Length: 196
Image 1 (tube, rainbow, N blue to C red):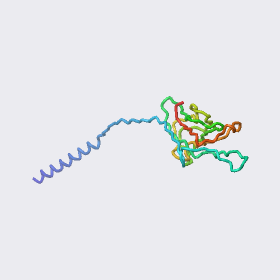
Image 2 (spheres, rainbow, N blue to C red):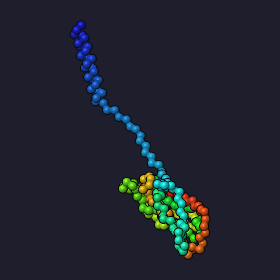
Image 3 (tube, rainbow, N blue to C red):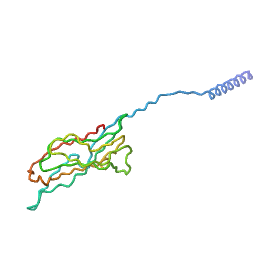
């Protein structure tokens, strides 16, 4: 009886080794599908350390015989954007369009500086360079190109990232006689990112 148990035990162990050897010698494989998608992106925002709504106003003189004072430029606004181009599109642009009236005798202008970032490293991609000075006419205007040549890229978010916007109010010296006091004149400026 002892011999039969030992023989059965050895057969059991041998069979176990045989099964284990067969499992170790086999190769199991499987495949899976991996999809990759990249969304088209066109986002922009204006950010400020104060408010993105600004007020420009002439300053009354304190001495007889002096002209009204021109306010300092407003430059605490930053244009941030993110862009992923669709196939076959080479670039985008940012346009500005305004509605409202600039009081007679005054001009309002806006300019976008070179793209920059507070981190010191520009956030990859194709970003626009500085814009030329755009004058907002005395009456409602059509879209004017502020920035162009925007590819797939991003500026980073927040103050100090993107393009610094500078607004200026100026008196047209030849039209000083057209100035009249007014409590307020309101303009709405719309920024749009569009395909080139």
